[in-house]
Image 1 (cartoon, protein in one colour):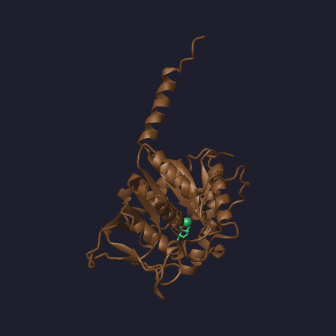
Image 2 (cartoon, helix red, strand yellow; image 1 turned 180 degrees about the horizontal axis):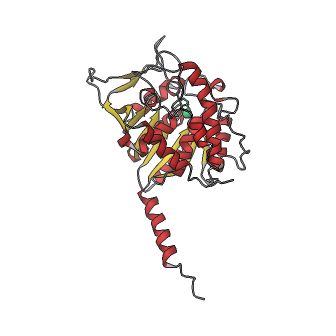
Length: 337
Ligand code: RIB
Ligand code: CA
């Protein structure tokens, strides 16, 4: 029996899809959803230039069980139910967990009536998923860290030989010119696990930091949530509701009219580096200061003579372009009413 030959058009489409996939950057997203993590994950799943190999979850904004369930709900909403989600470390390397329901709500992704996840996380620890996926990938993998960097630090300690196979680590975290958002000196992701961040910055792997210096320079348009709500898809309605909820706490705290989606800015910096500015310089983490634990100490003027181990982003060249491109990707995600 003759095998049904694909029509030339189908073949061309399949080849194009294959080409796009091959040109896309292979990434693993380590995350603690959180509304801004949700935007980041949706953006990454919808962006043709990224090939998301899987999500790994960590204790951060919420406890591990909640961040893992949230990650499953988000990938299912986006129509990517088959994407592997692996649960990771339930607490930082040395310190106690620091969930922040006052910022993200009781579920961590408040603002939308989420359907329960149909399936749970895959078997196997996140740290092992990171190690195995990096070693099995035919191309170096980029790690995107959107929460405390506990899983990534553990992977580097458990299997140091994965370092040369990691193209880059892009993390949302830290603050230098902007100070901190949890203490005067420390931003949340770094404060929760400063030792993990120090391991990552000392790994020799190329690192891009997307700190408060960059995200505070990249606030969403005022009332962006009402613009998102005009689309008739579950993804955009969920984003509108999450944005509206997420902005309440920050606008009250900072007296602003709109807030940056920190983690989505980090994915944007990987997707569209031409829209951001920064400097390659030495960066280290204060892990024992009475007042400054969790501080990202940025040697912006290179006074220490230490290795330039981090591209520290601190400016956005075109805020509207970032959020217009984000909107364009999100509105193309598959779910429609
Ligand atoms: O300080 C902002 C960061 O902390 C974001 O990643 C947010 O999701 C929280 O994890
Ligand atoms: Ca986060």
